[in-house]
Amino acid sequence: MSDREEQQSNEQEEQAPQDGAEKLEEFGQVSLNHRIHLITIIGEVEGHECLPSNSKTTKYEHILPQLAAIEDSRDIEGVLILLNTVGGDVEAGLAIAEMIASLSKPTVSLVLGGSHSIGIPIAVSADYSFIVETGTMVIHPVRMSGTVIGAPQTYDYFRQMQDRILGFISTHCGAKRERLEELMLDTGMLTKDLGTILVGKQAVEEGIINQVGGICDAMKKIHSLID
Image (tube, rainbow, N blue to C red; front, side, top):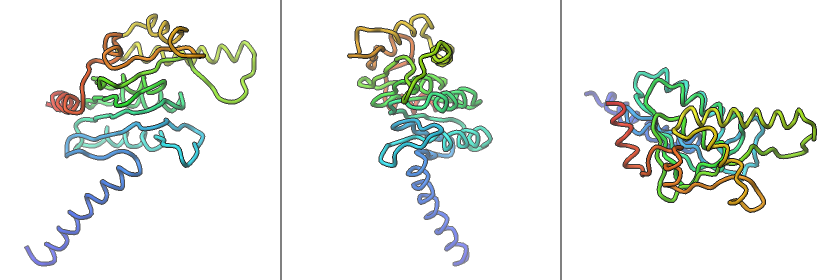
């Protein structure tokens, strides 16, 4: 190898880690190796409106193109999704969940900390899901900020949104739709609110998540699905 070729090779090796670091910092995504792509759903799922700059957010306009690129890539053979989210925009969250569910490549999700509200459809959209022992999932009715017009059409719209969420979750996990609605409308757990908090093993017992486990278990599973 000539001196020039060696210099170019060294520059490429230096540039690759920098590109990976920039992608991880900007989009929460990085290729773990030549086979697995990592996506993180962190903070609040941001939709059509920008959240304050001091908020930790996952922007759906960043995630959707990446998922399309993953589907089209010959090098990426599987996707690992890490979640620690409080929820967020319903339309954006469902869009991400539908994209993950429609990938032809194996997908595994891991709930760390929490995957609340619209984070639940994203967690169950993978082929196989894990939650750590201390991880939490909060299922509750659809909420909207701002002024709500007290008309029958408004409540019908809320109901349609909840039906979409419940339908997606029940289709992609072992929990029954009726049971999910019971958990969503429970009045005895959350103070001044409706809903249910499931911790670790409880999410598995309800059939929402497949297994309690950590990153080691998730990595083994994605490799086994690929192989």
